[in-house]
View 1 (cartoon, rainbow, N blue to C red):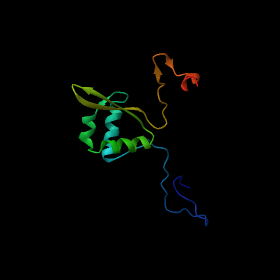
View 2 (cartoon, rainbow, N blue to C red):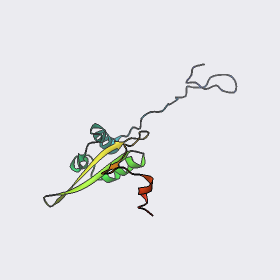
View 3 (cartoon, rainbow, N blue to C red):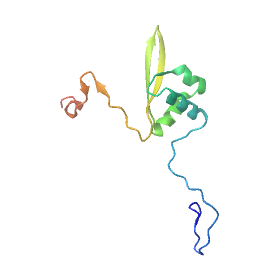
View 4 (cartoon, helix red, strand yellow):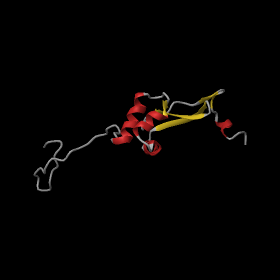
Length: 116
C-alpha cells in the first residue's frame, strides 16, 4: 500500500490522502512580509517606518505574530523631540529565548521578589 493512501474496511485503498508533517510556520500577506523583514534582521532593531511601508496597521500584524509564538521586542526613543520606534525578532516558536541579564548578571530567584 502507498504510504499516502488510506485502507478502507473492504481492504481496498481509497483516494490518496495528503499527509503533512511538521513545517515551519509560514504566513502570507502583510504578516508574512513583516515576518520576512524581521527574519532578515533577526536580533537587530528594524526601524518602524520599514514596517509601516508594509502595513499601516503594523501593530495588529505584530500582535498576530506574537500570538503565534514569535518573540518580538519593540522600543521607542526620543530623537530631537520626535519619538522613533524599532522592532526586532528575538526568537521563533520552538526556539529558546536568549537569557536576559542585567548589569549584575542573570536574575536570581531570591532577587525576583525584591526581598519580600
